[in-house]
Length: 400
Picture: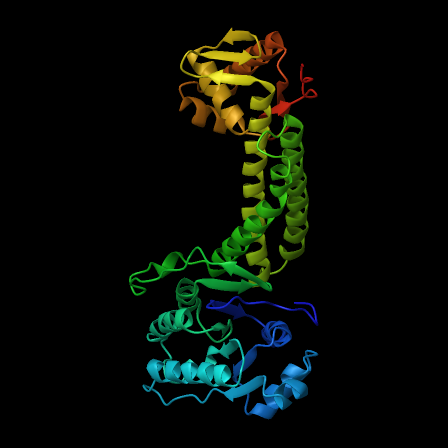
């Protein structure tokens, strides 16, 4: 996170943050406190430094006004005193959290934002057996307090299976400075029965990051269509599809550059996470662009009636055979997206047609029928990537 950045956390949020460097850990902590202090909230830092002075100095190096915040009591530093082996008392820690929240409320603060470095749990719970129970209690506590908290985990001190349980125990995750709603969150369940052998923590975190980026991108991109009302024209749909395609191409180029940089190395976990996130984003952008290209063709008046085996464009119609219907349906569903010949044979025909030569014959037939209809679409051959259905004319003028 850039120096001087801010991170806002909504009330009642319980988020997890898995970090790899002290710079990342401190940067995120300072960003949350910087935004929270601006909002007049009380900040609490349960740290893993030798004393409060060391923690204050570390935070000050990020540019946070630690002296001013401590002087006004808006920032409290709490050393995490590790318990002895076997003395992990989750309920006692929760009572302490409640007490801090009550003290902040009594002092006139509208809420509390906290960060806790979870290394304090290691001496008393080295196998992490009681850790998830504690995290579930924290989630429940946040529902009843005017507070929010980030639990921080050092990637170098916790094993991946335990960190995957940590992921599943937090309704929210902070990844690369972004607060992400967590699709892996398990409100209740048995963590001991999870198949950890198939775990890829970086892939899971990459998926969460991709999903959050997708949600944010969707809110921005499709709001452009909404501004035109319910009866948006095909020009609006085409523009939206183009936006998704542009972003897809940009993300694909970004992924290729990242791949070339990390391949000679043993792929650092941060790079693997980002590659997984980019893969997820590219796939999602492909799906969204296909959806809007399909809507574009429908808005032009191109309709496939699979029941009657008819392809209609405006006042004209052509008949399609059963295999032509199955093929065109797949091309239409993936409009604008190249599909390999083998995939087309498998998905459209379930291998009823077995050779690419046969597929090419059917592609030629469909091309001819689209030309007969004078439809605003054609089937392109994409070298090395298969076939795709594309729009290839300007939208027809609206008649009065």
